Length: 81
Image (cartoon, rainbow, N blue to C red; front, side, top):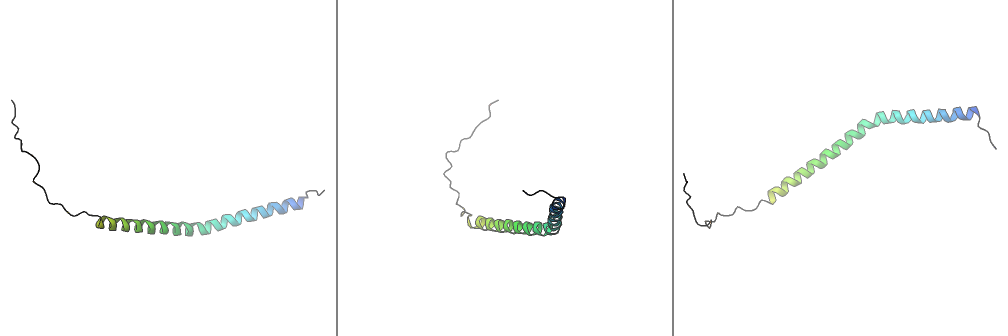
C-alpha cells in the first residue's frame, strides 16, 4: 500500500489553489463580456417581438362597419316626483 506523503498533500493543495484562483481570475475578466452579450441578445429579441407584434396589430385591424339604425324602439322615460 502507498502512504500519503507531506509533499503529495502540499502538491494537491497547491494545484487546488492555482485552479481556484485561475477560475476566479478568468471569471472576473469574462463575466462582463458575457453579460453584455446576453443583454444585447435579449434586447434584440425583445425588439423583434415588439416589431412583429406591431405589424400583426396593423394587419389585424378589422374594417370599420357602418352603423346600423336597427337599435330598437325609442322609449321616452318621464321622471316621477
